[in-house]
Length: 227
Image (cartoon, rainbow, N blue to C red; front, side, top):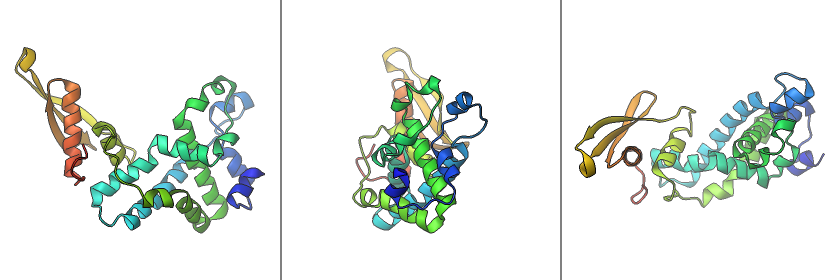
C-alpha cells in the first residue's frame, strides 16, 4: 500500500489505519456503528500537541510562555493541520458516506481530524518513538523558521492560543454600556474557564470584544506590534 511505503510503516494492525480514514458518515452506508476515526483523533491530538510544544520550546528560546502558546496555536489550528493532511497525501484515503461525498473536499475540519487520527493510529501500531520521529519530521522545519503571525485577528489568535493545550473556548460578555448615540461605548470582558482574562472598550460590541481579546493577548507577553 502506498500509504505504508510513504511513511516507512510496516503495519502490525491494518484495521487501525482503516479506522483512521473512516468518517462517521460512512457508517450509515456500510451498516456499521462507531467504526470511525473519532477515538484515534483524540489520541493523535495529544501526541501532535506534545511534539509541537517541544519544537516551539527548543527552537524559540527567545519566547515567553504566552508567545510559545500563540506560536504553537498557529500549527495546530484547523487550517494548518488540514494543510499537512493534504501535503502528506492523507486525503486520498478518506472514506465518507454518500451524503457527505460532494462537500467533504472543502471541509478543513475533516482533514484536520484525519491528520490527527492517522497519527493516533501510527502511535498504537508503531509505538511512541516511531510516532515521535514522524511528527517531528512533519513540523520541525516549519517551526524552526516560524514567527508569530501579527495579521491574525486578535479574537481568533486568542482562541487558538487558549486551545493550544485545552479544547475549551473563550467566551465574551458585555459588562456595561456608556453614553448614547454617537458617544455610546461598550465594555466587554473575555473569559476562559470561568476566569476573566481581559477587558476592552469600543463603539460597538464587536470592537469591544476585539479590544478585550487584544488586552488578554498583551497579558500573555506577546511581542510589540502583535494585536
